[in-house]
Image (cartoon, rainbow, N blue to C red; front, side, top):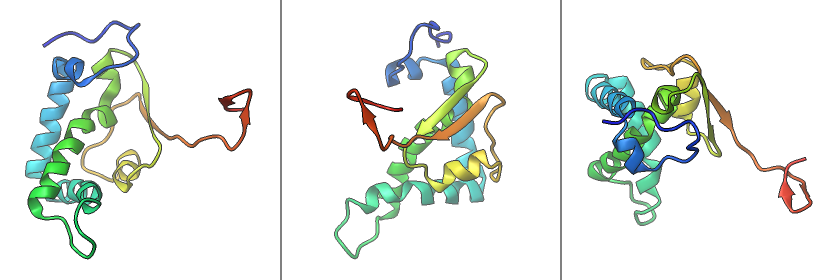
Length: 138
């Protein structure tokens, strides 16, 4: 496992995350929680079920295996929702998402058994309604 990335690095891919000790620790904690906490498991499945729901024929629901596959992806993202500061070696971080699932609202609302680390924030990112000079923003 490697140490946190250089502070100048702004983009981390899966190759960097897989070699990151803090990320691996957080992933294992999330995996254990998923296996041991029925409420957390149900919320993860509910949050992940929309992914395969768009891939099955109209009128059908995704199977258990399809939902579990989607949960695997979700659990891989979970460390970044919970504690990006420890992954990247900084004091604070804000996770931005354009379409937050209810899970994130409950997580950051401290309604679940697992809560974000101190210094971990969350923001909903929305595009500006005005474009000036070819750039978003005001």
